[in-house]
Image 1 (cartoon, rainbow, N blue to C red):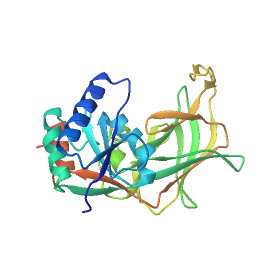
Image 2: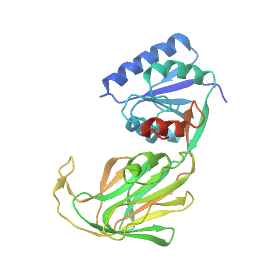
Image 3: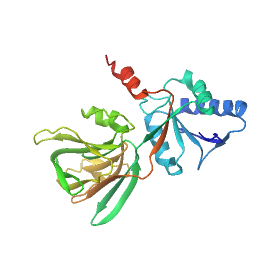
Image 4: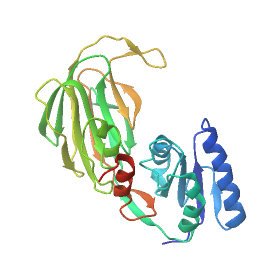
Length: 279
């Protein structure tokens, strides 16, 4: 393990508690580890995201291109993506990490493109999931793996999750729990009016595509800019684009995984015990 020379602390400016914690960590590092520089943007050896899972997802989307190690310090409600879940343990965790006492979990990062009339109008990376959903009615769409259609859905929509995202919206749709370091896609339908089908797990080297055949239009929901929508594209839980008839969504893995810091072996299973009281 190479020596840690720089860190970047990331949090949301509107999270007061997390901002206070950030300042405490900055002060502690400046006092105890003067050899480690604290960056405010760009490339760093470690990106420390302080907040909930949403904050961690934002940090990954912003800084994954620099290929740092990511450390999540949980100050939210769920904290499935966080390496450390209790604030009282933050300092002791940082001491271990700065001494090289940690594990590195390689997680899959994926890419989504929205294609309209043979032109890509939106593209971005995602860590957890992509959802295509009609907010007000029924949609008609096909899900394909490479050139083979595996599901025809006449319902609300479909979610494509990574293994890291299996504990997010996928779980609320009764999708499977998958160890986060397994590289795969999980295809889970949303309220299909046809015969219900189970989630499908496919290997990461495949291309998943969603063809929008049709959907019911009501235009009862408005985006922040006042645009009426029915069918929308969610990326990691955020609405990013309005979807139109005949659009195609293409999903593939990216060539470089995301490195997540873990302090315990089998941390995922311990998390399941804590969250669901598994016996």
